[in-house]
Image (cartoon, rainbow, N blue to C red):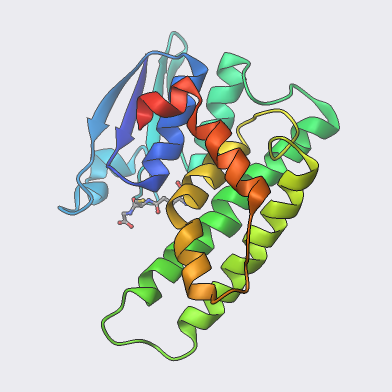
Length: 203
Ligand SMILES: N[C@@H](CCC(=O)N[C@@H](CS)C(=O)NCC(=O)O)C(=O)O
């Protein structure tokens, strides 16, 4: 049994989709980040960076705490034998694109969200993060023109980028004032991932 520490939002959604994809049994513990519960010492022992999502796997050999979305997805993929090649170049291709999704895409879009919604704009910030978001979505569009999913077959590399893109593609298109243009390959991929039963169960 796995305990899933969560609060509604894009990062928790990424981890929960993989919990569903993995078929592992899990229960859910809400950490209310609006009330500072992420700083409770008991939670910091699991997630020292004071962020959700995190999991604890209660195994016969002992408890395994895992924080950071990329590590959680990798752990669940290894445990279930799903959505991550076991070895070789394909495994590292998936891991590279997984980190790209959590680090580059997942790092840029919340910054854009923050600066675009400030009541008093900070000069240059929206432009900077919009330019980077456009660049990242062009990378993704090229990749998906050549591959059905980011690494060929559906894998853990698709999950974080799917969550970020589903939430942000249209806003980036508006903010970019035509720089991004049409994204037919991303649109096709968004529909395919959204139709997966595990993704639909998470909502
Ligand atoms: N790099 C982390 C980011 C996780 C993250 O930003 N979580 C946010 C909620 S979406 C959080 O816990 N914020 C609480 C805080 O910053 O105190 C990951 O990929 O898991």
